[in-house]
Length: 267
Image (cartoon, rainbow, N blue to C red; front, side, top):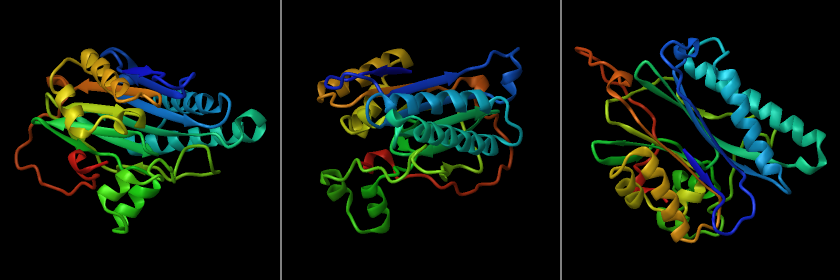
């Protein structure tokens, strides 16, 4: 994972974090945790909100009981409460909030929890799919059929977020109740809108598919900077190894999984 201040802003309000427990670590029972948060607010408040979100979720996920979805939902609730309390107690932090997109990987299954417009993708068999849902005004209007994808891309309201951590006393994240089976070679990508607003899905697919994670992260940031870099840019690329993928099972039943549209059709 890498984060860059961009070419215009003086401070970085993004936060990235990941935990890959060793095999002998008790935290291994919960597996890996990956997240990106993009803060918003006056002064340094956005940076405060994203840091609280990352620290809270990272700390409490490995202490939480229950299933992975229950743990993620609880962590998001705790992060929301912590940010909201800070915004009420510190005038410099009034109104602050943050997006947050987190993926947990346990026993060959990926679980997503998400609020805001930072994104999660999976790249499988050379194809890129967006698995998060943008919580923006225009994305909601597209899902309702009131706007086309093309109209949404050109809208001056395309960055208006309708859901974030810490802006209200409670929040309902988009959280998978079941895991998605992972295969060896799958690539999980997380990013803030500083990347997705400037680098389209075709370019992301080409970059992520053509290099190792560190090189891919740097290349994605370079592409966003070349496109203007008017926002903070944060990215993460993770490759699923053979021993982290779900093992094949015979006569495994199929089931439907709610997911966002293919990234190639997203704006």
